[in-house]
Length: 226
Image (cartoon, rainbow, N blue to C red; front, side, top):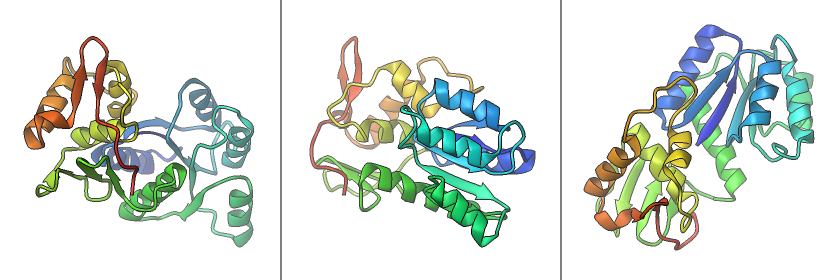
C-alpha cells in the first residue's frame, strides 16, 4: 500500500517514514501543503497522514481540496497534529478527516489507527485477508497457506503479498507491484519482484502466487476479506 506523509517537522517525518517502511508500506513524504496537493494530483494513495500546521497551504485547506477532488474524495486521511483544542478536532473531522491523532504519539498507535482507517475503506471488519487457501494477517504480518502454521514475512514480502491479496483474481504487473513496495527516492532493485515472489513461494507454496506469462502475477479469487 502507498501512503502519503505530509509533515514539515524533519524529526517526526523521518521517524514516521521509517516506521511505515518497516511496516511494509511504500511511503512518500512531502513537507508542505502545496507539494501535498501536487503529489495527490499525480499519484493515487491508499491513505494520507496529514499535519495541519504546514507551510505553503494549511493542512485543513489541503484536506478540503482533497475531499472536493474526484480523484481523492474517498482517500482515508489521518490527521497528525499538536492542535489539541476541541474546536480544532471538530474542524478536522468536519472537513473530512477519518481520524485525528495528537502529537506526541506512539508509533504503534499511529500504525494501528492507520490499519483501522484502511479497513474501513475496504469494508473489512477484521485484519485478515483470506481467499480460501491463503490468509494474510495485516496486523501480525504473517501468512498461512491452507491451514498450515503461519509464517512471518519481511516488510517487502508483506507489502507485495498485500497488494495481490487486495485484488484477488487480478493480474498485477512488475511495475504495479514495484509501485506498492517502493517509495520516492528508494532504489528499485533489479529483479526485486521476482526475488520476493520466489521467497514467498518458498515460505508458503508454489501455488500461492501464480505467474501469468508476459503479464504479471496474481493470487486466486476466493472468499472476501474477513
